[in-house]
Image: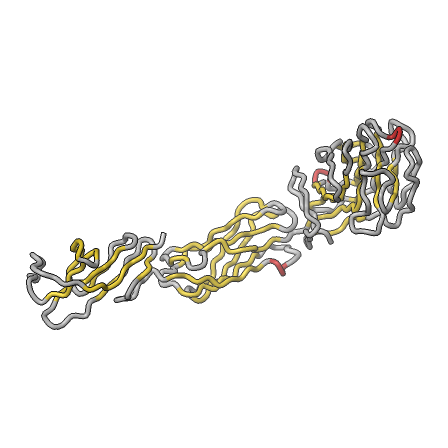
Length: 399
């Protein structure tokens, strides 16, 4: 089944590769079983399966015709149906059929009495330098107009099939028809066509599509949030419950609700937590939606392993990379009765610390040098009489 994508009140154009599972088919027609008609301007065409040309068009016998393999005029109209080898319906614009003539074709009755979130999809082809306009109207089952131009009128000059879809939730509980109203352009380069008409009903279907945080190689913190992206593949959902199971770097289960409305095709992020990831490690995340009535649980869950950097730096590294707000710890191994001083440059620089252990300031890219001493330093600090330095390492702060 083709995925039908729409937002309320918004017309979307879809690629051919888009597919969906969260829709129940109400009606489908590709016109391949229809008998081809004459492609001459003004010729009458009797369609099949309760599709009807309107006998009350403003010019007699301006009918939509069943056709295949390309319209007789060039360069205008399709060269084939959308999938290849089948039929389509088109409005011939040659001769007297050009110049704002109108042809109406109406679908069979579509029953919306038991629907949840119904919509319509169709494919159109509008190729020609003087292309006219295609209008889509909603009629009741007796062909009385309920709404003109349920979507904005369409015109184009592209030699390709394009998809359009729209909601019909305003007519839930009713029986309707869809009318295509073609208005020809100023010359015969105005052959428009439609194919692969479908009415459908979206059903509940949500799921976790990605992990928004923490990112790979992120610095650990004591209050990290888990961020998941929740997507809707079906009918409008409200207050979607989410469960996240964490293992490895931390072992816990988090529950939260994505508040408010999640429309079809929409994705929103949800933050859960916080959790303590200060020590880093591998964090295994399994996140899922638990929406009651979800029709496709196969796409509910998203799993990933995230590597978290520890914000706790081990003692005496030759060099250290620290997270924001953290510091590296360097330690000197000293002989008996010896002490040490610490400098911010290998050639001496500024005195920044005393003692066998030194924690770097929380600043970026600090070179650390250690000067061992056996005399000249009083126990509580004081004047440095002499020093020799040896490089202990450097710190690099992550942004």
